[in-house]
Image (cartoon, rainbow, N blue to C red; front, side, top):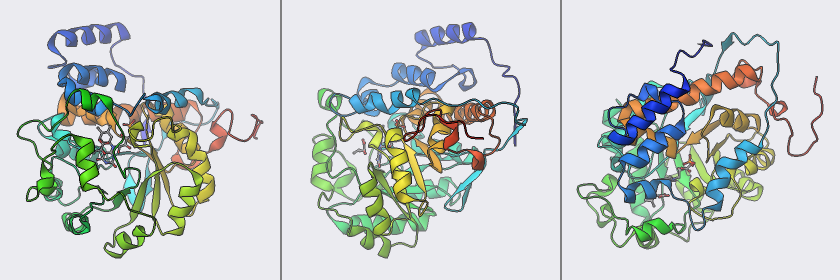
Length: 395
Ligand SMILES: Cc1cc2nc3c(=O)[nH]c(=O)nc-3n(C[C@H](O)[C@H](O)[C@H](O)COP(=O)(O)O)c2cc1C
Ligand SMILES: CC(C)CC(=O)C(=O)O
């Protein structure tokens, strides 16, 4: 149970000074505790990271219309404050696929985290674990499934799968992930080809010297030659269809969650073809530009799925109120991508921990102000104007 207490943190003016100081030392030395929100982490990450790395993490595709929408659409959804409910104790505990979570925020897969911090995926994984949640390791990580398995004491979280043209590579990866203790496979379905992020072309993105994609150290796949788009076009199987879900399910006992569903039609296909869960995701607005924001799509997917399998959403979650809105629209949890990279870049393990703490604390406060004291009590009545109806008093 989380007790609501007055936030003893410094007033805003002090934090402005701290931020100004971090301008001169590029954020180094700033204690994670002094960050007030995710945006402050982003600002420090932008100062600390080499331009090529920051741009790779931050960018969306093409004109980055969807990138803005992922965040902005949340701010257009209104919440209803409810009063005189006992909110002296707020319980944010929940579970997803039988895995207990201390609050409904998990970490989405993001590739190549050692560009943000030398400990990369290991710090992210340990911070997630210490906050009572979990992270997803990307297939294209700078830490191998085995190393993360060891570092986490055999509980590394979930594993994200890209299906390679050479199926045997993906098949082996799935087996290795199972052996290392991963608890679910996230099949990314939105990347037959990589979206065009113009800054990666401008900066001639390549993995910094000394880093490799550690899941493939024995293969040419470990290095990115000729840019990310060429790499993905050469390596990834763009002929993948829904029928291949059966193949994946036949080679693993782990739940298979499809990541990248963006319409009710695909949600229905996911159910039909046996997915164990769905992630409503537009890949952090890095694939089809001008596709809708994920929070816009979520209620339609939830309605199509009708409770048959869990629905998670990612993209643009930056505030506790965003989490509340996603849950009100029927998601069982949200995932975050970039906020974790900003935390990692700013302060490694401590930075990721603080990012998660900030979101948890914001969620607790938002729940209290919306008059709900447990996750199971969050429903669409919290949304001021639901997608299909005018606001109607619900007693
Ligand atoms: C730098 C970066 C790398 C990513 N790498 C992967 C990846 O390897 N596999 C994958 O399925 N999604 C990947 N994603 C997408 C994320 O899993 C997630 O969908 C997205 O970041 C969520 O949006 P947010 O960053 O606004 O929270 C990546 C996103 C970013 C920003
Ligand atoms: C290495 C990349 C292709 C990983 C990815 O999915 C992304 O950058 O969005």
